[in-house]
Image (cartoon, rainbow, N blue to C red; front, side, top):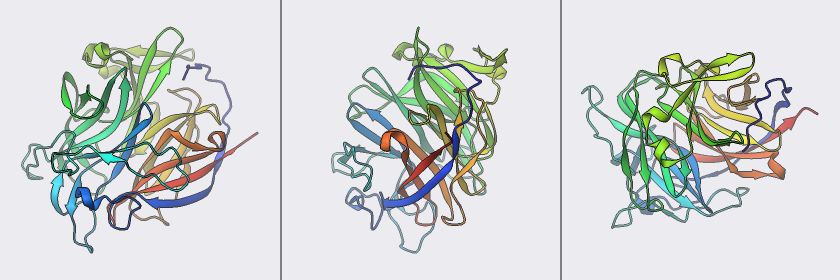
Length: 351
């Protein structure tokens, strides 16, 4: 979308209504036969649009699970998997057309983690956090997890990118692009933005875990820039309402403060505002932004945690809306069944 940098527009999102759990997308009992590709349990489900297809990115995936198990555990562990769909009707759930798979037709990792012990001090797993396209290249950001701690608390080694040059068939590391594991740039949400003179990829970021602020960086939307660490710029605050950008990560300023978990950001054509979703305090939260860097409105409950225990990772996609954008659709992970579900809600606009 084309950037409108005016920070003085009013907030127009009054809340959400008509929250609906539509379908389970993965695991036993889901609308997709994921067990045939050895996906009995998985989570996350952020989405990247590639032409008329959408790639769903899942986290730690297990091929076999005890029916009574809770959370991320089981046999045939892969650090991440991805499913493709051309389903453009979100109202009854999303049906997958196929997976990134191996020669046996089993869902395969885009990039495998080392699977070292949780206390070994190495790498436990590689978790995809978001994707975006530039030209014919598909990029996926991921974090290298060093240690899983208490609920919502983990340590990362670094964040980095992988890329596919062949429409998602194979994936490789983007060399030389990496962010420190103890920085605020570990988990990403991406959107493509034009300022009229140049096309950019904007990336909203949080640290490892679910207890950090949101920061913002951008990079020119060319493969050469995306694959060059020096091309990234970090939002460093405003000067008389205008954004300041720095090439120094240490000068980055937060755009949203809070204890924020996995996030997504999209442009809402219905509200003509940015929308951000994330988990915080057990709830799924939605809020509107006047510009990518703010101001951002008050947090509003999208999905209450007292109705869906163990929820996290509410991910939107601008492709999946109805009623001219008034109804949004999103994935949501539930820790107990450790699988991904499909929800919708209506945006209540203040006229």
